[in-house]
Length: 151
Image 1 (tube, rainbow, N blue to C red):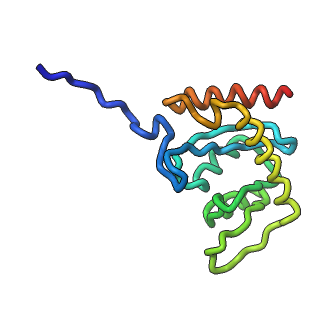
Image 2 (image 1 turned 180 degrees about the vertical axis):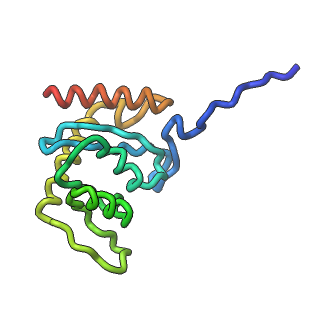
């Protein structure tokens, strides 16, 4: 007698887990407003690149500037953002042949995102990720974001 098990659709994508340099992990992509309050959260597997997620993060918003780290540095992202009239404040990677300029004074405002990440990582379920499915983890991240927003 054989026991047939149905294959789960999506595999690792439904779990948003993957291998990265640090091991088995999940990346949390966050959009915050000018006060550091969370607007949108996205999850991807640890090995996925950051820049394709930026379009989904700012979709529906009309920001004056997009402040992001070097992981979001790509020509296609910068061209699409500047075509919409948004100032791209993204430092260039060291491997670029032609280093482009960015507003270093405005880039210092990125600390708001880092402060928000520090606030949500105070909750044990966020930094250790007990949930197997990404929808459960994203739900808890949304709950913690609401708690941070209400402080």
